[in-house]
Length: 98
Image (cartoon, rainbow, N blue to C red; front, side, top):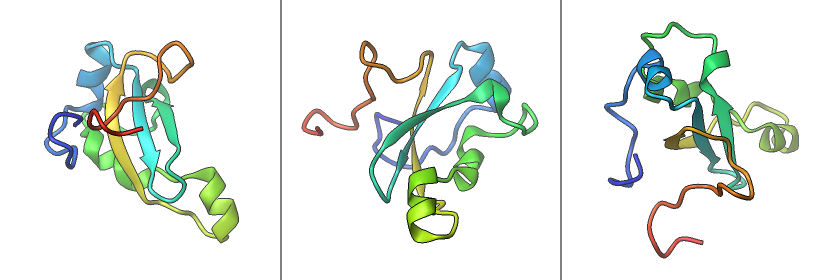
């Protein structure tokens, strides 16, 4: 997803990502540009669901409260083995991004 700077299609199945050790999905809100991680082991979808199909269900809580309706515009950034933290910062799309 990071290499081609485009959509996450084709993507692995949810179960395949978990078996490979990628327990988190990094998502960026297109409204406020915040990066969040979603734990894949708590997603209530069949393990055969492709990762890119989860994109339509992601919504930003902060943007939804401001707008008054569920804001569901997000971009899948990367599969990650760990959560975003100070020691393991967010992923960058290209070298010039800040």
